[in-house]
Length: 269
Length: 269
Image (cartoon, rainbow over all chains, first blue to last red; front, side):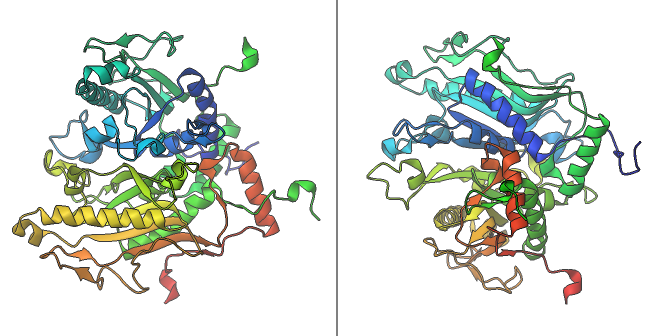
């Protein structure tokens, strides 16, 4: 028996803050097992909330004082699809990405001033395990752009190092984390590693004279959905009504996701 | 009658995602009335969530197509207090701030390539109403640093314009928004305008040959607390337990904030 308040107005998938938080917590266990990022690169605006929550679960012992846990630094780039900017303009045919904020060479190479006290801060991206974070992998256009541009910039900066510096640099590795991956045809392409790839057996490209950069990227989605409209809590005018509708949909078993990422439990072997 | 589960383990003020969201919604009405920012500058990591939610409530009609609402762009800087970086180091005496990500001159001046389609994107900060966003105004050290550095950079870029460009530029104004302001002695200083200041009567400084920059800054805190420890939801390992404890504290009337910002209701005159 359902009352009139037990209906939902559309086929959107509504997710609450607490659900996103718990999903990120679970995904973070797996990301830490597989990758343990040194630095987070959030794509604004969507990646801001996931990056901040993810950081809570990716703390690592300080090198200076291993009894303390340190935050993984967050860098942010802002990207916009042209289609989001001016959908009425004849010139905006939808697939181009605009950088509205990007990292300069200093942020990529790292800042040397300040010395050893800057652990985890201002250290740059070279030789790091870099985790790119966004809210949703929809058409994959933005993610492809972010990954490719970052890869290009990282390679350029590695090339500018001396042969000695380059030889001393650990491999630079890329991972991508999204809250939701939509099962749909993608316009963008990412060289995602097959299942079973780890930082132990990851193929590295050192075509450019010892630059040692991952040939592809790791990839995690906290939750997988069909090709549905997703309503995130941070977009809501009325968060109380949003939560109510999310609960109704869950109770009715409608507009639900198709899968959730879980870390391998230690007892699962 | 209280059961053993109706107690809280400490004197922290616990706030839920939904409460922060609603507070930001209320504060946004006032910010829109008083300031209507052109661009948000989030201070990472704390400002990431507030900035993203605030953006939801600060949409404005598109100049290209007024029937559509456009997002206010978010730029991000990352700052860290030295005391957060290396509390064990003798050289780190706590009051210095380190830029771990900052805006380059291009981001401040704006990118001209791409043309008119880039409405609200890559437009830079000069001649804008700039809203700096962080989670908490605690010692005020970080906010003082962010405001002063930004002011310095904006002035420098305005100075680099031609006299004609400078004359055509609208005033550059600064506002600060935090989710929580703690009532405590501040180490940092901000030139906050007195109550009643608006963009109509704001004092502008044009000492530098017509640069027209606000002499001080607007300031809004969604919620005011005593000098208490605040537990934000995005920092929690266990969000469910956090919400439970927040509800218990509210029921008991303990560890609560002292004030909430409300927009002037239209009926209040």
